[in-house]
Image (cartoon, rainbow, N blue to C red; front, side):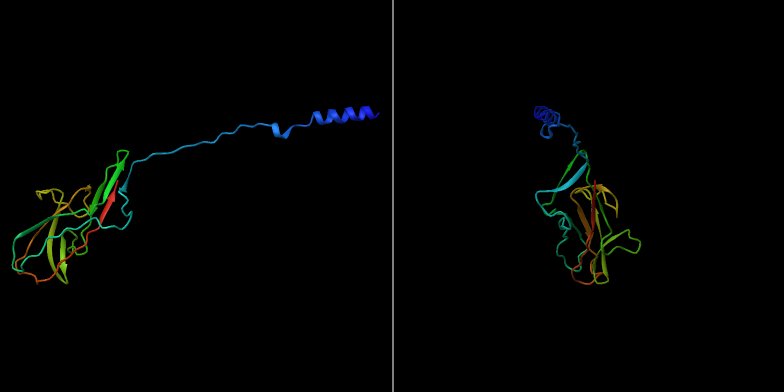
Length: 163
């Protein structure tokens, strides 16, 4: 009887599943989607940075000459991938005319109209809100020759970049 119990016990152990030897296979899906895009390159700031300055210089109040300047880009560079095309829209500035069709430099209530261009020859004017390829910007102002008081005239343009 003892032998039968020992054999039954050993057979019972032999049929128990070995938990350390079980195997099961499962899948893990791995993916990445690459999309068109642009980013600020060169370790510069990512948001709310100055793109540069457009400075028409210092002139006598009686001057009627055409003052010009090129936008200096402040060293900011953009890298675009996947066929993305970086474009910009430039608003009417802080001092637009009543119809928002003319950009103006301002000193108090006094205004001096100016234009910005996409080319150095200043033949391709950039309209308010007009989408153009991101590039250097050129400006021109015809000084009013004493029609406005002496002082510093300024404006701030907001440039919206898209791709």
